[in-house]
Image (cartoon, rainbow, N blue to C red):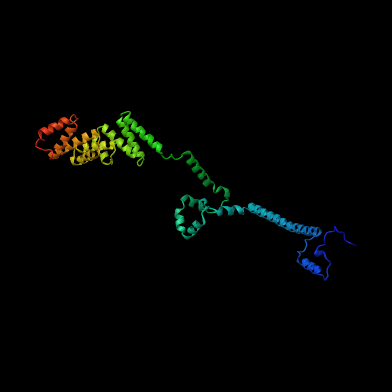
Length: 336
């Protein structure tokens, strides 16, 4: 039978076996290199049927063994409950509730030093752990940890009922100091302001506004004419070059001049060296001249008092300065 021209070209692996031509030998090589074909549908169906039979045959013994285990376990528990054997075993498992949750390292320490554990155990726990003479009463295991659970709940309820007071903030500190200074500046109530400032310093011993409160406290003491206390407060207060603190240094010099003119001159000289404020210079210049006259330094006193009159001829201390110069300062020259 002849082939038509439109028939497909035959494949080499489909050529008949046993030929001697070059094409036949190439076809044999190709057939040897090909992967064996997959099983047909009939073989796949037989393999799936065999696997399902094996899985069903292995599942039935497992289910039967599990059911038998559950039945035997339930019967054992019921029998133990009936004769009271389980009730006698459960209380002995944890005689003291406190030691029921000890970690492993605590158990090792307890076995290494039993005397220390005995000393720490409360008397109530020791009495509860010691069994009374005679047969052991059956106690339900669920009732043993109940007091500990109630104690935990009561402590939590107490902590919720009485919360800790919040820590003071910077706004609270500012508000408290503003109230105290208002009593001093606005109301001119030095006594109430002093009490409020003392309470502020006690409540905020290391507060941000501690220095401002101490300065205001000195003002309250001066308004109350409690000069000794004001001087004590100023002695422990470091002063810088600000105008307000320079004024407090003049005040400290005037308070020191009552008993210690040498220390007072230190304050006056420091103020005169750095301050250009006329009111403070007037007070410091006259105060240093008066201290020098009291200490016997006539030349220094005459120089300070003459400078005072030259700059402040109508000052608050001008009359006293002229009187001293007319009586005791005529013998002193400007150069001392």
